[in-house]
Length: 344
Image 1 (cartoon, helix red, strand yellow):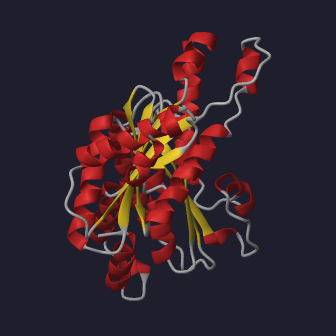
Image 2 (cartoon, one colour; image 1 turned 180 degrees about the vertical axis):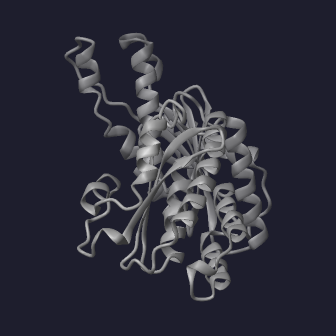
């Protein structure tokens, strides 16, 4: 079930009143949301959207503890203080989580510290409703906070194991498996939507490494990867394929859209500013990182292809981008697999 299906199911079970939802229903729904999340931030966004939708007129925010590693016993005094404060002033607590203060009184706002079964303080669950009557009970909010804390603990562990330490993208094996699932879904549904796969290789990366040091090279790789990642949607897939090669997979409606996405990624890499980082090393010069991107697409009506075959197509297109026209190396450009021969 997707997010919308979760919301519709919850509303059906609630039958017009959130209080009709049993703890067993809430547990099943909240657990299902974390299982479909790709990382902690995605899980939090889903929880906020889901609870805001099923609690009438509400705004729900989850504020994650920065470290999320505080021991419950060591932090017991703070937790006990929060336990005693059933209702807190809106202007005090809405601001940190990005909610605008309302003029409806203190009784419309509640929050609960999220403590996992292992005793880790994961953050706080904030719930605002326009009236006191619409607010879930204290016990219900405490139960939801506990379930969410346990689920976020699991997501965080999975997140740490599945992501590359340097780039923050998925590890190769995990990412390839996710693309495989995406590809199979596209092939089965036979919709007009397709999948775009781009393979980016950072230009002259070894020279930057040798000239400014490996720590600067790591910094360039991290920032380039994140710049590209932010150019795509949260549900799109990004992985470190190897060395300074990065692969991204995304849903698209047509071939032109794929090229626009790839060009946006290219621009994002080019626009990262490294001046302050070099200044820290006492280097008064500029560094502009670029990338060569190979692009390929797959649509549900196409002949079935394996992930490895699509990656190989993107790789061939990327090498064409490196070589440029007539053997003159241009780099800093996107070449699609279908037009790669025009670049020889």
